[in-house]
Amino acid sequence: MLKVYLIFILFFFNRIMGQTEVVILSENVGTEIDNHENRFYRVFPNEKGLVDGQFVKIEENRYALHIVKKIDGKLTKVRRYFSQQEFDELKNYVDSQPIMTEKAKTAMYKGMNFLRAEKIIREMPKPQHVSIKYMYDKKVSGTFFKTENNILFIQTPSAIERIDLNEVDMLSYRSKIGNFDNLKPYTTIITSMAGLAMATLYNKQRPVTFNEYGYARKDIAIYRQTFGTILGLIFSGEVFDGLSTLLTARETIILSEDEYEKQNH
Image (tube, rainbow, N blue to C red; front, side):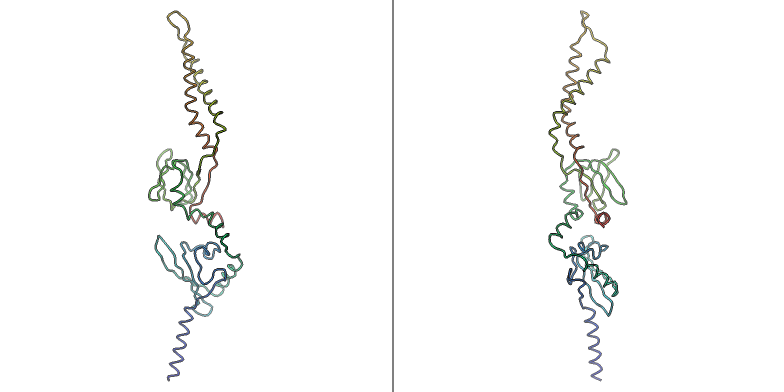
């Protein structure tokens, strides 16, 4: 009778041990798959917020994947189940990829601006004209003038749009205005000539003024032309700034993980 109990205890003990046996998916990732490895090897691309994952063999030809995820700042544990075939297919997929080196890891994160979205938005020069693609492929263009509690305030021609940063997929903006000082003399000449031309056209549309002796007041026409030229010079700075902005190439950044997956995979 004692022998039967011992056999039962050993069998039960082996079952428990089998349930807690940690299995290495691939030498490329080791016993635990962290968030860096998951992004690099794309082991579980649909598991958003993954902190780490670990495979456990629960019985013959059956595995459990224990996942720790961070959702809305809180750690959550979930479990997924894999058959032997699914486990082997995933193992072959990870084994077939190159080992993640520090250089490869740095290159991978270079394009993942969505991980630095808050910092990028906070440091972005404001106000400036931006184009945004956000929730369900909606698009808006306007002047981005402030951000508050991760809400972007965009002035459009008709209203102020408030867009949650968490809903933004892509944003096009100018990180800095290019140097086009070589165009400044041309801008000054063109705007002053434009002012002179407008004043000359205005003179032609006005009746000739005569003094008390019957002589035409040409000085008035000259005064208007001078005034128009000066106005052109005054606005040359504004025109130059606008031209520099238009000539500066825009930078488009991806600010959501879903959009990154769509663009790169």
